Length: 290
Image (cartoon, rainbow, N blue to C red; front, side):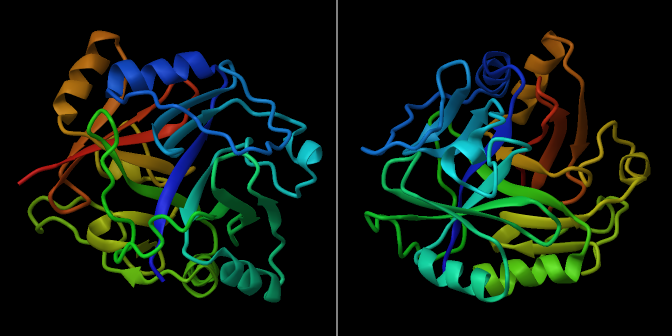
């Protein structure tokens, strides 16, 4: 079953300030959110929601709404702590597998995004996960897991990194219940590869060519072992691929925004930079290199 990352939701304390970072520093272009005909009790405005991408895919910057789950009769509150959404061709099959194994699901139906049926659950490491399906059946048969989708501003979601506490159970959740296929993590040559545990106990990847979902065990000394300011193994992050990562670094330098330039050290052919957005979400910005 082919799948792709539909969007990444980031909780923001100040939506306008956080959105300006993605727009003015990273270089993304704001998109136009489209709602369904019947809208749930979502309570969003320009002060609580910013969006980058097309057709509601991409990056969602959202202010936490304490009563969101209660207002919509959900178990899960997708506005708190952030989440990522995986789009699948048959949401009912996934929902049945989840419920048959005792995973609690909030079935939101089509309530916040036009033509998108959304359900929420927790993975075994208590990450909020959204699974969704296009009810108009557009892009159902994509032929490849998480293919590159270029958004306005010439960027795309490269991968989502999730910290896990129980790797075997969490990897099995995505493989057996969501229906993903494990892939290989491709590293640079031995002369440039960084210092980190790449065993199956610490790193499991779903998706081709390092794109997709990275499940990672938290490694307390990862940043010091690799001479970085930021530790990408803690708390999870989203990785955005841009056409010119050095231009992004120059813009961060111009406003004294701290970052770690990791170079090409973990993923083959990829220059990686780490930072925090103004709401302290961990962000990776990367660029393919030869």
